[in-house]
Length: 89
Image (cartoon, rainbow, N blue to C red; front, side, top):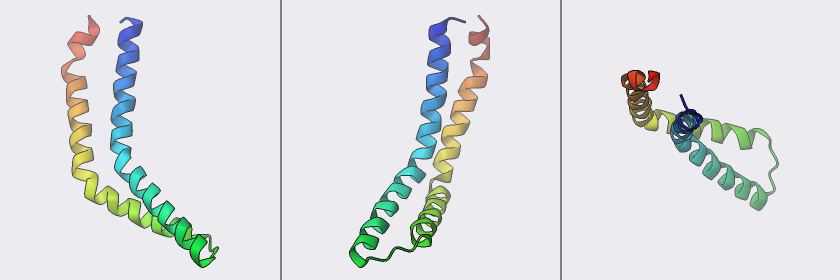
């Protein structure tokens, strides 16, 4: 295995992991900004108000995006396993 192959292999794995995390991260970011604006406008400084909506919304985003995430994970794993003979060379 050449260094270029190993770097490309690691890059593909990291890109796949980031793509799978993207829906939850975007929803958490959007809800966090919304809650921050709401807190600044109403001057409510409750700590649980920042965490609970984010956790609930990210869990809902996970449930909605789960089929897509599993499809990405299965296709990456399938490509990985099918290309094992090419990796050995």
